[in-house]
Image (cartoon, one colour):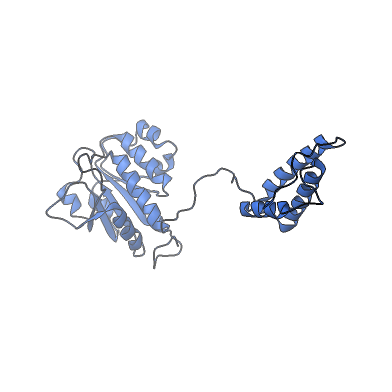
Length: 267
């Protein structure tokens, strides 16, 4: 399951999540935040009165997430950025006497994803040095904190965005997101029973020709080998490798008398 209960089936939960950065000082952090978002499948970036934007440093730090920067919406106020949202969370490390109840990042992500069924939701991040003001925090229904080392809880803005984006992705896909690797899978399909039987016949022929197996006294060698390869759950590529090896052994031993070094194995 990767959709919030009750959500419009045309939208994934992450499509309804806004990342709002308020009064960002350094354009590089905007680019790095866009990169963090894109790696986790988030695309909605809103900026409240950024000091410098657009900016070449933001593009450089985005490292390929330029499309998020190009589509980013610049707003004059937090109220404008949160307009039409149904639920908003303020990300802050500071404990506040007044304000919405705090949630750890993982619990908050689960609630945010669930709330996407009602409509647009937002995560609000503050300025790098001052964080969010009390007024900004009070525009939200929850505060969110990252349970960092209590002796050193300082996180870069983009790093905080990355942590929350990761938790949102896990929550959106019920803790089982699809793999992101584009590499060719190492595994091959399971070998057919017919191919496995042909391999056993080939193996037996080579063992007999090499002198390793005495067909008059086979004992339990073949059943033990079947059990061995059965545990391996052979794949089609592996069968091809093994039969190629057997072909090479046959070519080497063809026409030569091989001294029998083994009589097989006993129990």
